[in-house]
Length: 143
Image 1 (cartoon, rainbow, N blue to C red):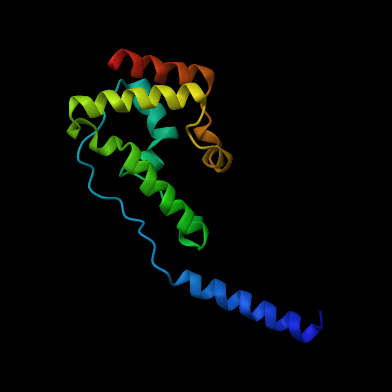
Image 2 (cartoon, rainbow, N blue to C red):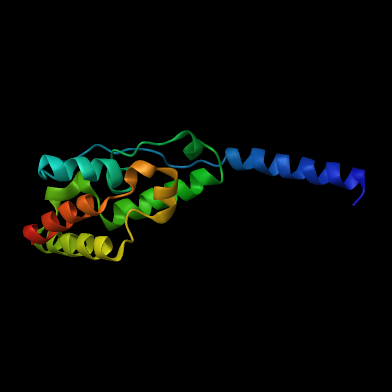
């Protein structure tokens, strides 16, 4: 590839990245309607490993303001809040709560939560076996 084409390609990439930054991304944290009301040990683990995606208390990091990572992060938070939202916990009916506890239990047993990509960037979200056991006990005893 000639030097001239390399410069054009670089200019196009830089321009595309610049345009991507102008695309709006929803990074809002709606009002917290309520809290889970879990025991302090459980609540601490949930805040540490779950609340960024599963509550209205998301901590939006610097890379959440840079496209295309901002798009991925906003998508994960939107999906996480849609699946399970600790900021709306007691607002749910009994059937929804039971489903939520079953889902928490299943995700913990399979090791699917927190997401691997989240744990990679946030080592504090890597649950120890003891923490996982605390959350499983809470979910099972709440059913």
